[in-house]
Length: 117
Length: 113
Image (cartoon, rainbow over all chains, first blue to last red; front, side):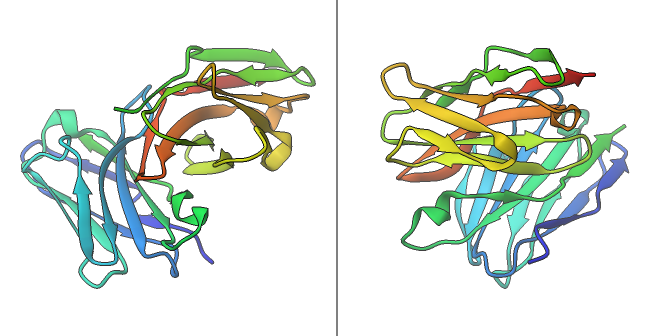
């Protein structure tokens, strides 16, 4: 069990550019979540997958944001035409899914810090 | 809609002193409650969770929390803190029909020598 990994850890981009982040969940976990955390706030839910299916999206996830999990393993989060307001820490988490309460325990990666200049 | 309130933004305590972090939640159904800790440059680490049963739950590193349904609270406590407990602490809620977590704004804890 190597934990949840995220790449890159830091990304600096200019306004208007596209960026893509990657998340690799704990290998046996079939649920994967994306959250966004701005300075001084707690994480806010963006979207989650069960296997390759995207089951829920927050209204925070504008049309410029897209997430995929094509083979039910790693996931990517892409932001198109970045804006300064997109600057934040993007966190990925994973959990197992089954009939037990373990399904509700989410394990987080270290995050990708995005700075839009 | 669910929400979490952590009324204390920043707490400073001396090493060896006790710590209590407050958390109040709003949730329309049976809540599942969590405390996470975030150290600088690190991801969120799960300290403890409450699903049902005994209202006093124990977690890692000597932390414990008590679920109080009538007061809709889930306060975190530690009897004696260490310098290494300096971090940001987040309370979160989900529920039996809702897997996503709703977090409070966090409480920054500074433990001084």
